[in-house]
Amino acid sequence: MREFPKRVRARSGEDREKSVGLEPVRAVRARASGEDGAILILAFVYLVAVSLVITMLSTWVTNDLNNSTRFTAANSTTLAAT
Picture 1: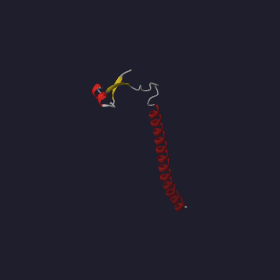
Picture 2: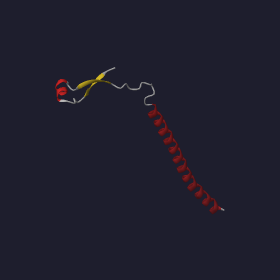
Picture 3: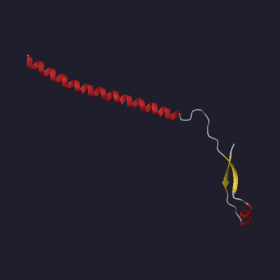
């Protein structure tokens, strides 16, 4: 494990002269579980799924609005012919 220097203050005047101000400190080891970043992938998949659902619903609504206009026009033409 790597050791990094840590600054420490001496308490008295004599200690200040003796110490150089650095003390070895052990580095904190990072977790190596193999699941690092898994939550980011899950969040990305969730966002893509929600985006696809919203896109499909908006396409469906737009198509239905266009069809209702055409059905109204076709019904008017049918009523005018009879």
